[in-house]
Length: 241
Image: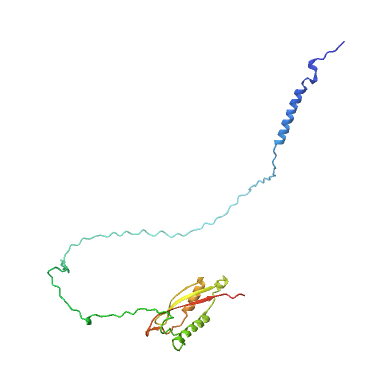
């Protein structure tokens, strides 16, 4: 007797379909596994604060004494009173000073004695190099050339005697040359001190030294006292230590 197989009992008839489905499922799981992202999780501790008691703070009451506002200004109303004119006012007639064609002009001859000439003294300034008689520094004697040399020598002695280097300029390492211009007026006093230099500290010290100059005998031009402008450089230099 020969046995026949039942087609429904054939186990391998759908093997290719199951293989394809299984392969697709594995590929899908592999894809999802590769694309899956993970993140670092930090442990966070949450504390719960329980307020069992409510703190009450006593706030002191501060009284501010504010002065009362000033009283309102009183508005003063001016009353206008109309006063009748009682006294009669005489009108003043102003005569014209213009000359007409028929007016006769009085001829008057003015003599020289009636003209007063007032002399006005001019402040003349003559440079130190060309003045006839230079200003005389206290203690200088001799002719004009000797007086000029003595004047310059006394100026140098005055600078060395009164020179003080400003402390602030030393700390900031400020140095340089200051040119000072001044005028010895016709009374022998030092006036119109001007200067220019690298810094205000040095300029102020240079002008202070010049302002201490003594009163001199003024310079003369044609035996008349005149003002004499003079300039001198003052060098501020720090010594290297």
